[in-house]
Amino acid sequence: MVTESEARALYATTLHFDGLNICNFSRTIFAAWRTGGIDGKWFEEHADLITQAHTVSDIRKAHQNGKTAVLLSWQNTAGIEDQLDYLRVFRDLGVRKMQLTYNTQNYSGVGYTEANDSGLTGFGREVVREMAGLGIVCDLSHFAPEGRPPCFSHVLPAGMKEHPRNKSDELITLLGSKGGFVGLSQFGPHMRKGNDSTIDDYVEALEYVIGLIGEDLVGIGSDSSEGYGRPSEFMAWCNRDKGYARQLTPWGSQKVIKPLGKLEDRAELAVAMARRGWSEERMQKVLGENWLRYLEKIFGE
Image 1: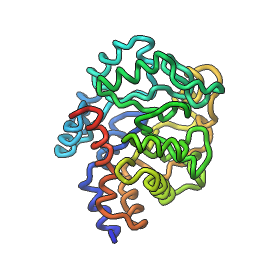
Image 2: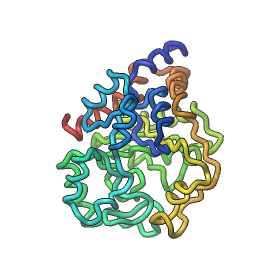
Image 3: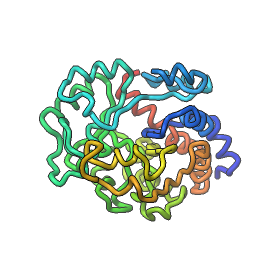
């Protein structure tokens, strides 16, 4: 049995990887990343805190040097428009993970808020093939159910709470059978107890998904948005089609609980895992090592 003090000590030395973080980036957030153990211009201005990662070895090197490695990712392939060649351009700039769609339709496919669930487009299938060839992680966290995703970076299981953004046991199991990966979101409204959810409920959700696909394919994908208010201009933009049209969800202004708490308090996650009887090995895997092994399969380095 891992004690609370042992869990905190383990967290302090364990490499922690968060699969999705959309905070209002600033030096305050970067410092919180460092305190919490979460690994262009910002990289130059804050070189004492953060460094850009292109490979898994970059992430491990940053951890050894006491810095936070930042792996650039997109939550939408809208940025490549209908140009496959742009994938290589942005890959070379350091974008190593892309979500095919956000909440609505784009050139690649359909987001989960669309009434017509048409899955991937023909162009989207080309995008998936090209991403695989370039070593870009394909993330379908917001994709409609007909997709065949290699990665869900920030989701919760529909088996614990039915919601259009949550993924079914069948999809999660299918993904696991193909060697895919699941990062779990801490978005309270999508959790079993909604805004009454706690950090222990988050660990329970981790255990639920581990029960479906094993402890080697599960990690953290917090969807942390620290630094933004509700309402705020950014949240209003996120919750409207293309940033300005129809409202997609009410979350831009409604109360949202995120049970992992502030970034600098992430060690409490290890303590909660210990309370549930987790071994040190499982804790280290889920906190970061699983993500890195998955990324190595995609990046090849």
